[in-house]
Amino acid sequence: MEKMRAMVLSECAPIETNPLKLSEINKHQIERQNEILIKIEACGVCHSQLHGIEGDWKELGIPPTLPTVPGHEVVGTIVEIGTNVTKFKVGDRAGITPLLEACKNCQYCKEGKEYLCESSTITGESFKGGYTEYITVTEDFATKIPENMKPEYAAPLFCAGITAFKAVKAAEPQQDKKIGIFGIGGVGHMAVQFANIEGCNVIAFSRNQNHLDVAKRLGATDTIKFSGSQEDLLVQIKEKHGMLDAAIVFAPADLVTDSAIKSVKKGGIIVIATIGENPSFVAFEEKTIRGTLIGSTKDMEQVINICDEKNLEVISERFPLEKANEVLKKLKDSEIEARAVLIP
Ligand SMILES: [Zn+2]
Ligand SMILES: [Zn+2]
Image 1 (cartoon, rainbow, N blue to C red):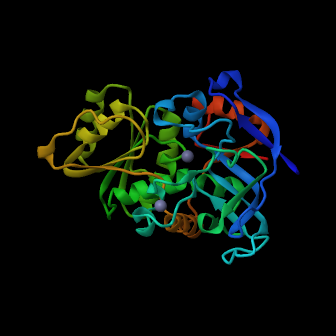
Image 2 (image 1 turned 30 degrees about the vertical axis):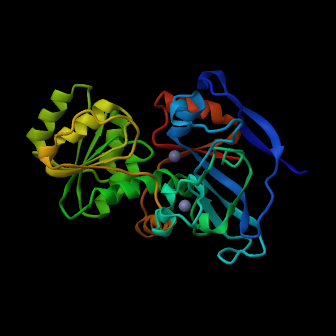
Image 3 (image 1 turned 60 degrees about the vertical axis):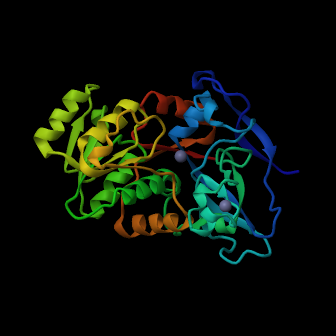
């Protein structure tokens, strides 16, 4: 059996203990004739991997099995195709989102919301993850990427990009609508741009001044630093902008979610694209709270097209695959500006 290099997680542990071990595992092979084999060019490092690896999300059943090869923002070149594959040919480039596969038969799948499928397979929650050299996927769950799109640009689009895109859509963007974006990292910096091209006035919130500077450069109308005091924050929002029309939350902190809900005017929309609890919600204010999770294959195609056509910026840094532990440690310490990608 041919082997490949992979960063394998056998046990959840703090990232400081280097829980990912460089290993030689069996190279994936095409097993069903609708699969493609991708030689990975890059895999993005998502914040959710940090939580999964450190065991923060055990109660949520993540990771569901061990050992795993983490990584769910995968792009590469197709080196082999099954005999029934029609969408791709060898040499094409393609990417995979966190949704590795869904049943295609349930109500969600039929409605084009396959990411909600109850019998889905998640990329990076088995040996099929992106922190390695090769991966297989059925053709329907891979998305074509343009020839000239750099791997470190394309990879982050497959989780951060699609999550940002879907969250902005859920906020019902319109010309001049005031949208607050809470949390400007790998996902937030993309959301600022997606909201911007819809003509919205974006107000960016973060604890981190560097992130606010990035948001400003990418088109945010205003930025407000969150010092940790909700009262302070709400006063600043009211004084500078009145109430917001909508808010999108990417920062996984209940205080942030609560602040976002309170900063939106009556009848407004709050989109929550992270985990946590929603401490205060007053029914009489007629606000809508909406959850959101990645997006469909169709959404993914749109993300690639929009980013390509409008030249949106993807802030990313390249690291060798073997540095996965160090990169995740940097992410934990807020030393990654937006997104890190691993290059095998
Ligand atoms: Zn992700
Ligand atoms: Zn399904």
